[in-house]
Amino acid sequence: DQQVKQNSPSLSVQEGRISILNCDYTNSMFDYFLWYKKYPAEGPTFLISISSIKDKNEDGRFTVFLNKSAKHLSLHIVPSQPGDSAVYFCAAGSPPGNTPLVFGKGTRLSVIA
Amino acid sequence: DADVTQTPRNRITKTGKRIMLECSQTKGHDRMYWYRQDPGLGLRLIYYSFDVKDINKGEISDGYSVSRQAQAKFSLSLESAIPNQTALYFCATSGGFTDTQYFGPGTRLTVL
Image (tube, rainbow over all chains, first blue to last red; front, side, top):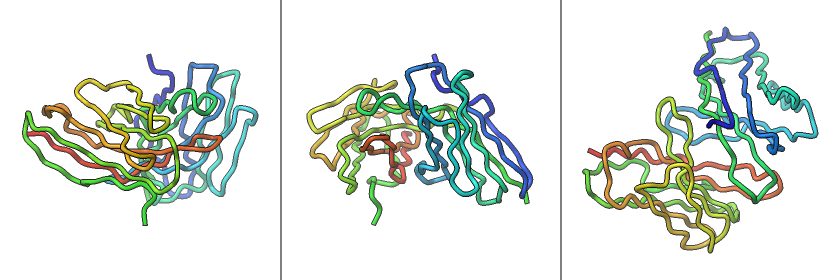
């Protein structure tokens, strides 16, 4: 049973517009969440994270929102750029050292010029 | 130099052969992981190690084994490779309070 779900396998957005990637989780023990970005033929790279004590974290063009009551988080990219085209993985973690991160299956974002 | 390195980067082998994939890290992390990526299936955890004396099975450990030779080295072996083990394999390390994982560049393995 998937504990972390990314229900959209793919998303296309025009350059300059907002990209919104969504992630749902089922385990209420998760207390921090991360987004990773992956280009073809490269390993995933850490993008941004959020602790369960916050509902928003911002880093430049990237903002992650967390809605604990809905067990939902989203990644907003504004403005979207062609270089943002990649696969984005959502991941969730329990208190450090207990269990590894749990990853979603990823969403492929295509930013069209 | 990269913090997490994997060797080889590409490997083609035949069914039944034993294969070892190696991972080294210079981040000083205690925790290391092996994942495989298949199209549409995301990242699936094969094995993980929280320190040198700790080895744990992940979601899909059958057909694989690992060895944690040192804090910085974690190798993955396919005892008798089969075609459905054709995939991208990633090593990762983590440490610190947030346990953020840092990935290597991957090994593309093809089993004929």
